[in-house]
Length: 404
Image 1 (cartoon, one colour):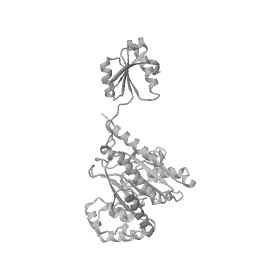
Image 2 (cartoon, rainbow, N blue to C red):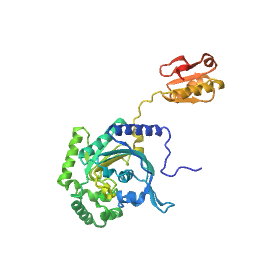
Image 3 (spheres, helix red, strand yellow):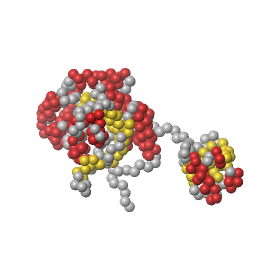
Image 4 (cartoon, rainbow, N blue to C red):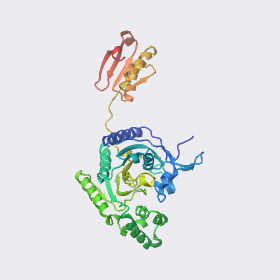
């Protein structure tokens, strides 16, 4: 028997109801904030992610589904969503047009990593990207949007904040951090040795317990911010305080991708085990420029959908639409005609096999229909449809002409 690949799961009931509910809720809220939908390809040039995500990241170094296609192109399945949106932003010359551009997207991402609870090789993200706004108020807007989405889904969270500085304060801090890492000698892990020369700040995100104990005394970027970054970070905290969004400062929060600067944030849940991050993002003002576009300020976030499915508090299911059935074979054409008319405005599900009334009522219950509509010999003779309102527990004969 052929089975799905490891770490690539089917989405079936009851998960698909939660999955759909999440997408409907998150998309509705994103639209309210003034964002519109964008779709980018699942397959991109590998160079896009090497230049944006960064070769020092585990994603590029270890986890990409990368291959040479039949046209001798080096391609890979997208491991994250931001790079593709930035590529589209530049390719369609939106960077040259100026102004503000706000997008949201959702879809599958692919990373070859060890599958575990909340971490799959094919997983789904909902993401948002904003281009053209330099103000830290846009950073706050991102955080408020996630908070609104999680609140609408009934999900509790803790918000972690940090500032990663910019091109003014990062270089001198990097020198201090490298000097500290070198003072640790051979005690650090192999990954940290590699990161020291490629992207030193990533060592702070190392999951090795021995490394973490060594980095407790490492210099903190938040203590080495330039005046502009320090002012922006203070403003961000003030905005969140004014909107009663609680947060905690995490000086080791660096995010997993190289393109972040200034604001970095992460929403975590204490109810999903060790993989506690359910959403995260930050500012990446230089990424458009790195990918050969016109310098453009940008900020965004992504939510891992599978990680929070079990946390979603679903609304009470409501009966909706019609279940339609025939009492005999001769009545089925009329049932189909009524269903066709109803579908112009609402849900209508047809049972093709003629059955007794009691069995039709059971079928309507199974699909949680509001109405059970049945046609038999009597209804054909009187040109009516027998309808029962399963919520109000009332039944009536309705003229066929009212449906068609």
